[in-house]
Length: 267
Image (cartoon, rainbow, N blue to C red; front, side, top):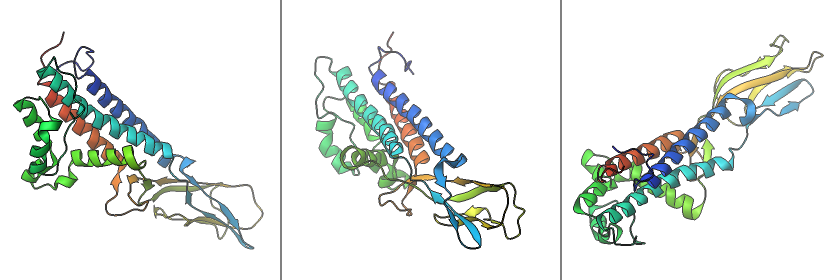
């Protein structure tokens, strides 16, 4: 394998895009995890009745910038694949100019791949075409995998949504109350803290009788897995953002590693 930091390598741009996607994925994952481990991800609005104070859990909407950052991860991964095709074409045909139709094809069927490869893989060698074909969604059927569930198909779908329609809709799914405490600790008769476990927006987390006493605070930690959703609601089809980023970055790395072997050594 060549040195990915070598600026003379034709895939240096693709390698750099993959590196940027990896870095952005790390940053976004850290932001998501911090949102579950501090008090920035929720509010506890207080209600007062004649007899008690009531605190309810209210999650703060996820920042739209997270959706934009996810889009950057997706775009850099998908763009790196197209760079591979352009550089392979130039490797085989040094006198040619890049063709606007050259791109990394993604097809659900062999028939579709064969129909479009002459345009999308223009001037590539048979070995190049073989490499690209092994990553096509329809090849997964040989292993009993649904082509629509492959990393490359998911990457292309998310890329088109982010590029042409709207930023990805991110939601918090399966909220879990992992910690809750009152300061000072509960000592007033009738004081109540919610047991740990599943929690939803609007659930009561703390009750306290209206009696004289010192000022008090309530702290909790809620685990908030962040998922992509087409509808803004948690459904069986929602996918964890961390898992998506890991899959996209790993898939792109696999393509680049195998494409790298087709290029000669560069000093």
